[in-house]
Length: 125
Image (tube, rainbow, N blue to C red; front, top):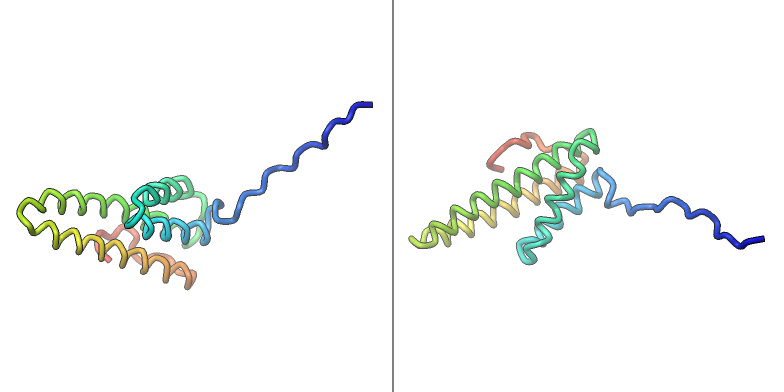
């Protein structure tokens, strides 16, 4: 007789890895942390891209909102950086940070109320 180990059970993933409300909340938190720790925003973007199209329901609007928030915020930040040479860029960079935070807070609040983002394609708030 040989002692063979029993077959391994399928690996259980944490709930936050699966597409849905908890996962979308993790992306918002990673985005906000990205203002201090830059790389976490990129991790959030990857998670949003991976899970977009898988969650279904109102959470889909949140993934679209999150992806657009990242790319539009990056565009605004780059424009602000260029304009820092004429000093107005510093004010614009602050405005971009406020815009980014507000979009994340709007998303978190809607997510907690089980509501979709009303206009996920918006460039504004």
